[in-house]
Image (cartoon, rainbow, N blue to C red; front, side, top):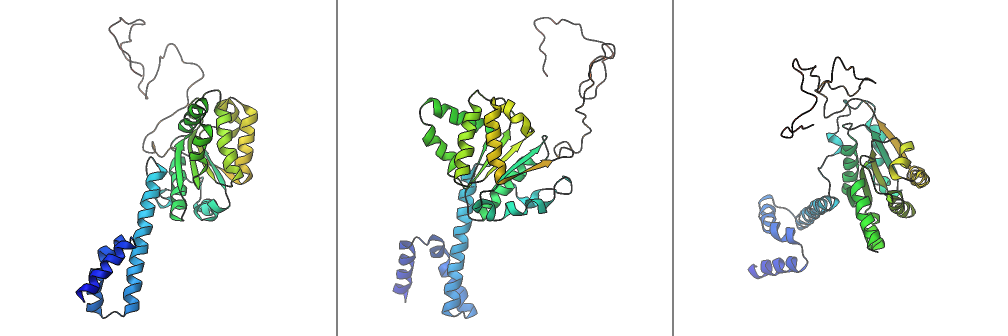
Length: 285
């Protein structure tokens, strides 16, 4: 009997069933105590191995996705962001989102939950059996621009075309080089041809993408391909980050020279600073 157990252990090792090899002896003892049949024992052992592999795969793909943080759709506060209902995202949380190559643009001012939602949707795709990649628009454009200059665009482009889901975060937040539209078009067009979805987050209305990318015509072509099998969702309402603070971002057209400036709600100081400062004074804003 001992030899049979040793042989079983070695066979599990040869089959690379590491988790089954780790737990089978404990399951044998449990099976004896509870008087399992052979079928129940074997089914339980295989179920544990499958569950372990699924969890290992999920952790591996989540790391590979390079999310800056991990959020799920259950973490999102739909009661705070009243402009969005979870039912609006139903099709983006199912396998059909990837299979059918649907795209999504999440538009809104900072703090509205755009990145949270994009990560949650991409993570759900991983749970549904696909892989994903997260990047900012600045990082993607910079990486591919350098690759283009070095004659390595085709090889590098593959990194952004291959994943089942691509998240491009913060589109339009920063300025890009003159080749930005050309670079981004390559990514969008290649994924469009292969029916692979892209999730964009942006604070810029679509009509301004041409200014951001320095090419209105290519920007229009990019948006056209995204929205042919995609959707635009606008997130409105207050910022979640500053929900407990009363911050006003509206400024008067002209500052009253008599009343002076206001910083963070602080009124004009009683004793004004001189107009010019000596070379040893540092100002930080």
